[in-house]
Image 1 (cartoon, rainbow, N blue to C red):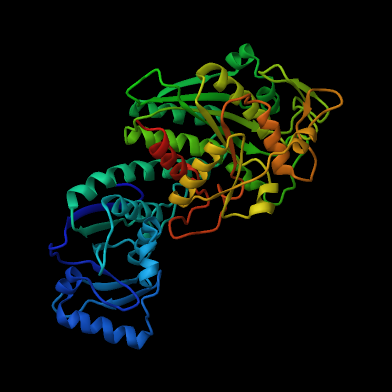
Image 2 (image 1 turned 45 degrees about the vertical axis):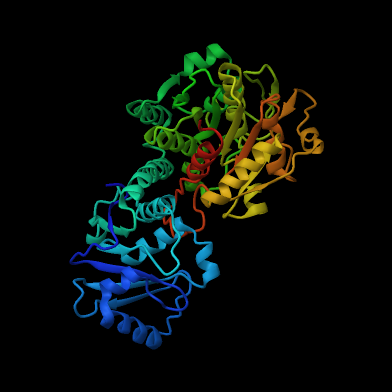
Length: 497
């Protein structure tokens, strides 16, 4: 059971008793043969009469809920609209699963996954289950008083043409759902619980799935020379950690890996350049990029992906203290490049700089992708429904864009031009950690670019989508777990052998 939901598969010809019956119709209100057989003539007539009475037109993402017709062993009949033939041809199966799960709620339901002209594959059915699982996610572990509906789980039986194929495909989708929900849990946790040492301990639990986990402690980071990351951490009573996760699933163990790097600032006060009090509580989610990396490694290992992938996260807390780093400090990064600190609230790029350099030097990846809740500027530019993509490689950028479109986690490529790089030149050091107010997301990306050399690289600024994003049919959580589905799709389509 995952996300408060159990899912089973049976043939379209199956008959059951109790719970809800869910059927699907287009704008012509026609039932599939399987649905018509279950509901009988009286049921089909009931749907037609109720649709006319309620002005239900079968539009996409609409629903009609009725008492079950006579002769049908069920409590309710739920009719889900799919829209026109054109709408049905471009059905987003994950969204449909979430919408359907939202309509049936925490109940037992038989879902007749069929309609006239149905052309869904086993993979489509699996995506439907993914949406249903994600819709049922909730984070309420700290509530001492819960409503009955909060405690209840859902049990869905999907009636499909090929239960065996659907069951096999849905196992991989369940692995992805598990990764997304792990990422959501991490983002939703309060910072007094998910401090760096505890975060690293939780990541180490991935060893149960076959992931190799290495934790770099304070002494090891000092030995390596991670001066940029350590500068951010020095104002906190909590020691930082860097966690390296390795999934070696390819047949050729020596094949260079894809590297995923995440910003893991478990709480960001802004440091000496302290943030305003309003909304500071949201800064527990400033580790959303690292959560996406951890969730992706969980998903890949759970479904035994045939790929070599390295995940690396820098975990710190950015706090004001007598030992905090200051504006005008100059720190030396692992690469040897020096950085003038202009604003201590531009800390994520310092963390990523050392982790990016360590990963490329140690693991020689074929490509690197970092994810970070890096700038408010990207929210101004793109809002909270789409992430910013910066890249030094057109092919990698195109792959990420396509994977995001397919997975429903969209990105928009942003420019990286010499002017942005020039904006971070410093009078006193090799660079400064902010280029000023204008083009803030782009100058932050230009900063990171100085730490990737010639490796194909992409930076995803997910500040708008990782937390407090727009609610959707598959997410009612504050922490979205954004990025896991995109990265899993990218690995599946371009890196598995």
